[in-house]
Length: 585
Image (cartoon, rainbow, N blue to C red):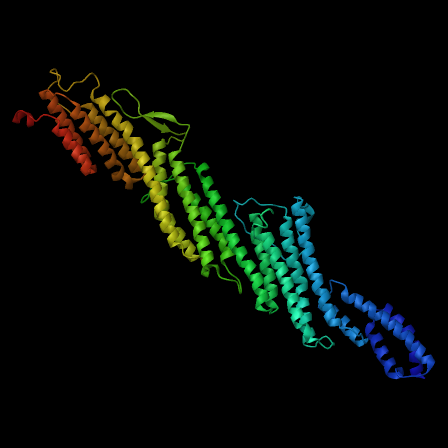
């Protein structure tokens, strides 16, 4: 009687358990009913069983519908599959679950990308409501104060975030579901002919994600119409893509799948490296507009402005950001320091920074000030020698010297610091770049020094002839008094050179000989010309000329070159010799 009562009450019990979502009880009751009455020929029992089968069929349909509904957790999927198998489903619910979960992931990923494409093409501004995407990947961006922050997350970055979230939340369940299916852990007999299909599904998802990330993050000729990711978001995007790679590695996927994402990460790291140093290069160019001529004196290097230190800060800023997000390779990532492409790219980028700074020095030195007041160099003739004086009391020539000192300081001190910093922080060696930078800076110094010497020597030499003949002086005048002192024009030459010596000594002592020796050559050449232009010397005039030349020779001898010696000898030879021993004495 108990068995009959169970059968007659079974349809009602099934309805009640459906309401309570107690499928396990339904499965047990259904199995018991089939065991007890499955082969009955009694029409009443058969009619009840037909009603039960109808209800079970509806339950199967409902379970199939739930199996196809996404998102769904692995635990939920396994339970539904087990229930369908227990209810004698004729299909392959395990494989069906895999197909639908894979399609859900692909649709989710493509929908996110399509939304980005639509808004990118429409050039829409991101809504403030989307400022913080709903995902569990938190941003941790440490960026330079020189990089202007943005409060609104761009749509392309939101797309990166959303895809990372989809992979993190759902892909592991798909992979585990597939593994459980093929090891027979889903209460269903696996169809091993689907193994290759499953591998293609996994690769399809990974390739889709990789291609989307490349399109958004890595500019090419086909994606150049899209606006680039702002530099402030590059580290965040790299972190998100790395999080995807971490999720995939934890699943022990085939190398073919992992290499797809690994390749994107490598190219993105290289892209970030490129962007960081290109931005640094652009900031270096702007240093020409920020020179304040605030000076520091170094006992070994001379006087420098803040320009070399500003240059150093920009390079170090780029280097530290690159170290934090690019150079440091995580598990199973290609090491940039061992990659020839990356090493060559880094050398080109750093060289560009150094080249830009050499150009900045040249421009700052040659165009130090356009709005300057005049100063006067000592001249007995009353003519003025124009120098340039800036708002902070530095003459243009002094700024030229300071710029040369900046270049020397960069070449002798900063380049070695850069080399050490790059090596200590795990970057590839930049020895070749440093050697080329030394040449660049030496060329810059040569140009600036040539300009400085020309600027100083021309007015100084230009005062000699007017001062020599001030007051209608004539070398053959019979009214010339006997020799008593060196003439004022010679003292003027010495005085102007003393002022020049002081200027160079104060700013860049190492250039003393280079500057004065060249200017002494121009002075000696001018003295040779002037003495050879005199047609006749009186006896006192000849004695005076020789005394002046002796005074100049004695005073300037420390800065003589073979040329200046020859010119002074030529000038002396142009003066008639002493006629008596008393005159010579």
